[in-house]
Length: 491
Image (cartoon, rainbow, N blue to C red; front, top):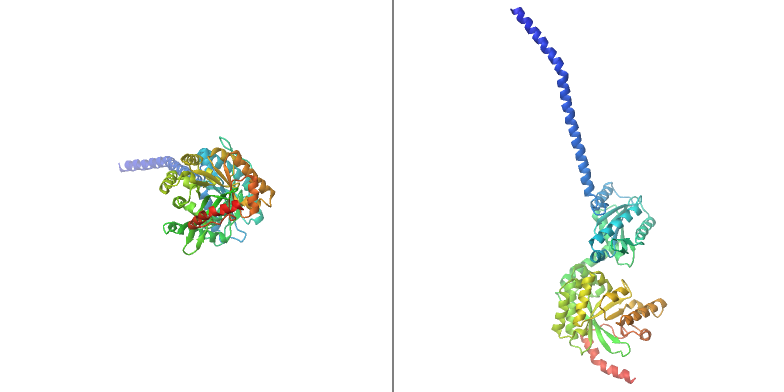
């Protein structure tokens, strides 16, 4: 029995071995199959993750409106440039481009038109800069062009000319063709730049200077721009307390009838008596006041003060007050004008609101409604500095006006320059056509006075008549005027 058992066990062991040998390939195959499926699934997941990361990276680094590289991509690329070590003397250049009148497109034609303009400009930039530079959209109407390597000054000038040439043709928007321009600020990536914000700030300062130049222009950053920006920053800081501190005051310059030389009005001119810097003229701080929004309280103070002073003068002597475009954005502005007139007891017809044509690109509907309401109340409207900037006959047709004021730059040149003399003549003819009076600014000589009198101008203003004077000085001039007019008539 033991032998049989042994044989049985032996045969069983042998059978088990055969089974193991048979099953081993199956088990190994199953193992490797499962392992392969797991590995394949892992590879698929890794590929999916890679594509997802690529898609996310594309979204993060792409401007969704234009499809261009965006600010994040610019920061990444500039960071890579800075990370390579000290930048060579040749250095990479950065050009910051800003559109002109973009806000006007959005306000007057709608945001869809604004988007279409940005996309069209983006396409022109990418095509023009292909193989030359990298193009990015910063947001809003700002674009950046990065010229890598060591571009010469001449090459950068050529690139800027090429970019400005993109505005030579109008942009076809849904509703109409639109002509616009652009300004460019140029800065270089410097060896000691601590971050990308440093070069962007320099380009922005150069852009700010370029925008002060009429027409398409480009400006390369210079160190004095930073110093100027610091001074403007100090002005902005000081403005915030100047009104409360009573540092502003008004001077008044007479406006006379050309034929009679009788005073018809005074123009109110703001001055700033700074405790440390002395007297600061308006052209040194008005832009800062507009930038900070302080033009609203300052402008309201000027209007009220001027009306109160004019109420002391003999009727019908008037007062002219300059008003900035941002003041019209304030819905309380027209009611404020009416309140100032009522408080002073000044007849509305003795107040002239002077505006420049730039206000018509703030918001045409608001400007038109405000000017119409003011004129309906009896206030006169004068278009100041006519002949420069956005001068347009269409503005004379669209907006209610009583008076044109010819910019002093033409007055200074008209006797020695035939073209400027003809421009003055044309402006005066426009005044006659639209039945508005005309005032010539900047009259300094009898020759200029006689010249514009012969052309048919209505009024004159300038140093020949009087420099700006204090409120007391204005009153003194008015008291002397009857005697002077009498003496002139006798003579």
